[in-house]
Image (cartoon, rainbow, N blue to C red):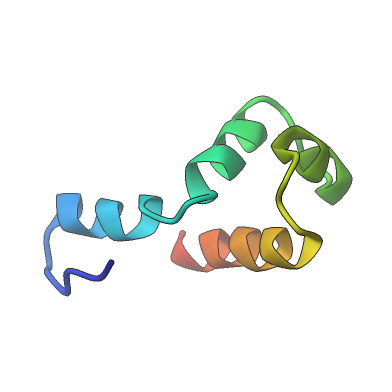
Length: 61
């Protein structure tokens, strides 16, 4: 969902609203650093989605 507003809360909702984003952040905070560690911790995520999701998070800051 895109709000198109210059508001920190709206921007956070845009970024964190992605289905896997919060789970990827959880895995990173728990110490997962390698692709395989992240994928193991997330279970059902496809490799293509994980590589796109983590790259998107890096681009957003």
